[in-house]
Length: 459
Image (cartoon, rainbow, N blue to C red; front, side, top):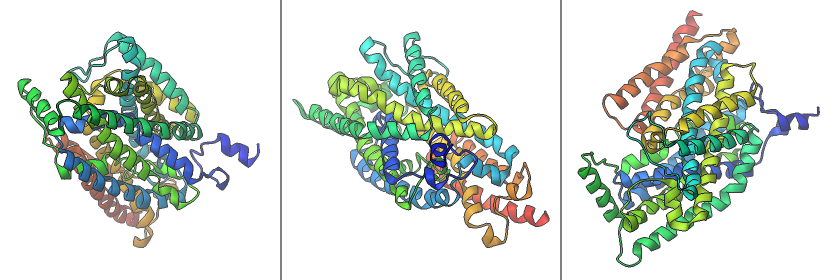
């Protein structure tokens, strides 16, 4: 097999990506447009309105948050990815040892599967609309949807998993094809919803928020507060696992030049800006026309632009779930180095499909993405310290690989201590999860450096 043929079929899970397999910027712009102008936007946008965010705070807060996210991808992730050209999982293995990193890979893979599962739910919500299969969010996390909806989830999950199993090239190709059309449809959803709000008796964003608050009070629920800085932090760190957590080392290791590192900008500003606001307008228009506050992605799009909206929601869920399942498969393969990537990706797809059958997950995305950023983002500090600081302190980088060790305890201790404290603050003290991504990242990095100074000198 020639080098070019090998590059076309190999995902280079345990070797640096060779020059023959590098990809130009277009692959990355298309993938990020498809991944972040996608299924989550149909859920997160309406959740902002339901959480009481003003339109002024949303416009300005997301602008600043998305600038920060783009800069983090470009200057934190891209240089390391292009220098090492390794997956996150193999790079961690070289630092922490195969034994120490297995726990992280397991947690990483499962959380990515849960995120992909929420996208399976989103796509299934749209598939069900023409067949009269309703999407509803149960009170309990552990309650399934209707049998018919669960069946649709299984079919959608199988299709998404099959695409992800084909590897990065296929994932990127699907995103490149779908992204331009989806962006146009999102814009159409926003324009139609805005027109619906202003037809007849005008209906404002604030009136929609007041309607939601009144329903919450009637149901005995608290009304959340989602102000400017909370929006900034969420916009910046909702993908904390991808940039601060270095998960996208697995993506940018294929980059031919550094300009590819700006590709997340298209996802942030067309997806996490325009699409979020357009999706929120869908809910505002639905409240005016139907007095319905349920954030059902398929129904929201159907009520705005009909069948085109349904198709967009279906494909949008796919283009988010595909690369997420791909990442999860790489994580599971990191636990079992001799396994095949396609097999592990299929396993990830099965887990994601099971998660997608529990609709409550998709309704809790504002909290979930912050929590998984706190858990997974912290480990990125280990890679940052190992790459930039170890040699400056006269310490060995990639310590486990250099010493032949299968277990470097400094990594697990540095990761688990701040994450445990962070989870306590989230679940016991009610701290907004996204607030903890950066503090946990900093503490993890400092602990790893300090422990390395002690353990390497002793060694």
